[in-house]
Length: 591
Image 1: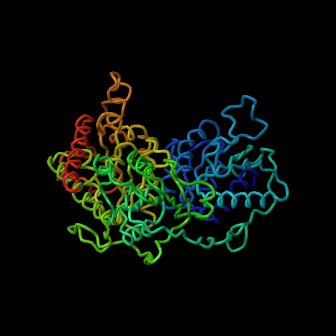
Image 2 (image 1 turned 120 degrees about the vertical axis):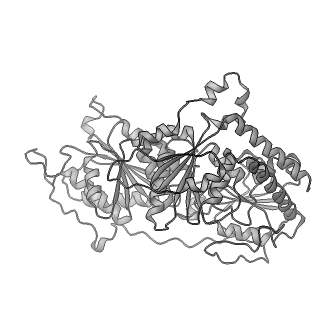
Image 3 (image 1 turned 45 degrees about the horizontal axis):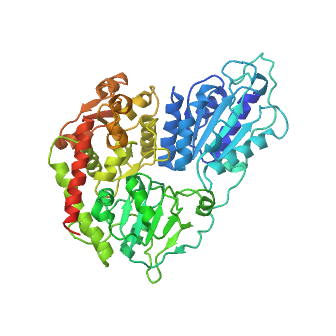
């Protein structure tokens, strides 16, 4: 066996012992040892993609939904650079990735050798760990070094601040196993790891939970659940216990019964926003979806940031990073406890506060503060739905609301950046049973299709049995249409990709740039592309959807498929203003 094959097999075997079960590979010559080692390993499912950017976002989606590190492999040169956007997203959203880039050996670097660039520290501060894996030489102790390094990389990816790690692996020829007559040194040292399949380095179990921070007993408290991979149930229980309103972004998965579904419009309503400021805001996750939330945080007398997470040690997370985009945090804690005299019930599988949809207040709304929120919520919810239901043709906001409402329990919904996630935030009713995810770390539109496919594949693999859906904009679809191309024999998702096609960038229509004379060309960016043509290139089923009543039927089906809803940016901007005006009027009537 040659040294390159030995190195690759040991790295893959040790990562599999740590828990690796999924890997994404882009073809290339220098990465041959890693690709062949992964394909040969019985515990690892391999996905192959020709586009490295698509491959890395596919790995991101797999890791985000499975909550386990996924390996992504490429050859040297610009291939490794194409991983960078997904690495940045993984870093900001705390998703564990194992980035394995093949490289030329040191003697070829800086010589003008083909496909050779400086890959040392390529991703900068976006990775939790970087290591240059030395060129394999048949020397004593190398196997222990490789296995130890693999364990360190895994631990860094899933540690207190989960995220991507980067191993740059230099290979010398020969790159394929058992090539006779090459004159390469033969590997003689045993490759075996620990007995009974144990990792080379054992990892301790989770550290003891820290003592929770006791919240003060105030009347005007608010709970804000931002994007993140944490358990929302304790925060819903806290809201029910204290009566404090809970404002939940869609990808917090906390917008269930008991949450304020119209907070976005309420905080934009002048009279409501002019009310008394909160004495206390408790936030968890990354609440950065709306300007209204950030402005509201700046009004709070006290802001407690909770670093709770589903993966990793909350104490370590506290030491490394926390979300405070408004720069208003007064306390940063790993966990919270209800005010003195109130006891939180133990977490349950799901959360159903004792309130029927027809009730004006939940039982916990005992103060004027909480009752004012629920009066406004009831009025605003009616106003939003009345405006959206006035036309049976699907608008962008109605599509977002109805899609989230129609999905069966156990479904997964991937929300694209830009307007899809914001329309969900503005229109989605409170509900449970659907898991919402999106790329909210850096919030780019690149790699969206591939991330959604990876998320769907991971959702299918966990045996939950629910269907997967994606709500994307047309620019996000066009930006990553390569993600739709899946080779024969590759694992394929059951995923309905619902695309809002308004012929350009709709988000800019609501921003300051909208009035500029060059707006349409520079920001609107019309393209004139039908999603039917995009689907045809990848040989995918296509449905054109126009009426709200046809949505349930359009969602039926299996496999990867495309559903297009054509809208106009002008009409959508007008509708959003009408919705806000209706909420303003309705809320003024109940305050």
